[in-house]
Image (tube, rainbow, N blue to C red; front, side):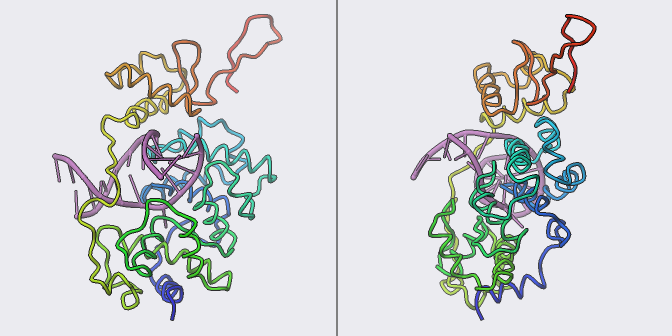
Amino acid sequence: MTFADDAIAWFDRNARDLPWREPTTTAWGVLVSEVMLQQTPVVRVEPAWRSWMTRWPTPADLAAEPPSEAIRMWGRLGYPRRAMRLHACAVAIVERHGGRVPDDLEQLLALPGVGTYTGRAVATFAYGQRHPVVDTNVRRVVSRAVEGKPDAGASTTAADLVAVEDLLPADEALAARASIAFMEIGAIVCTARAPRCTVCPFETACAWRATGEKLPEGPSRKPQRYAGTDRQVRGLLLEVLRHAHGPVPRQRLDVVWPDDVQRARALAGLVEDGLVEPLGAENFVLAGDAPRTAPTRWGGDDQSIRV
DNA sequence: AACTCGTGGGT
DNA sequence: TACCCAAGAGT
């Protein structure tokens, strides 16, 4: 038996029942799930994914609306730039690929918000191709089971892709199944802090298990602060803008954070990222929500019309 | 290569 | 309580 065989056998009995794994899920549904799952736990993604797919069943549906609607629907999933990139991704899919999510890896990787992991995940899980799909779970599993090390590097390297590809069965369909199985084992069994080695399909073959499965003492990654950072301030500002119907006066943003310098920097960052647009000197809206002025056939006065 | 970018649940 | 960490991408 191999790691892949054992992983597939385990997955067949233990896989979570997630909506984006249903056979009827489209490639767009898979892509949306993968972007939402970037750094966000499954339990929070699931309801958001259902709402999103109900409102925008195809890339063209999303592309037809302004980015502001995507940012609002994103809710509190975190890292809202992902919402904007997913919108840009939908637009690109319509423009470059006629509204169909491409099945070619190079074309996938060229889409906004689609990187090394997400591109391969879509090619593999939506289209059944054979690619190494390497996320934090897979890096950890391979690091432990194959290399005997308690944890892997912080990001995916070219060497990681090669190491994982070496584990994949030659058969395309089996390789795709092994990839989702490796991820699931990392998410459910071979977890970062409290691995459940006694129920792991790799228990007897695991190189790390053989060494006594010692976890490193300190934090393996650098501490991730939040309180008091620009990220927190951006979150507070965006929360106000998400719930606003019309333009938001600067004064309403001023009250969310006392430090003028930091607040201004955070707001400028949101504008720089394209999440927020200034409207005149003293008002702000989510990207795409600016009322457009259009000429009317009744005369010269500009009239604000929502488009 | 190192850094930024949200949010919330588990321990 | 504070800290860890979660299907990463872009610069």
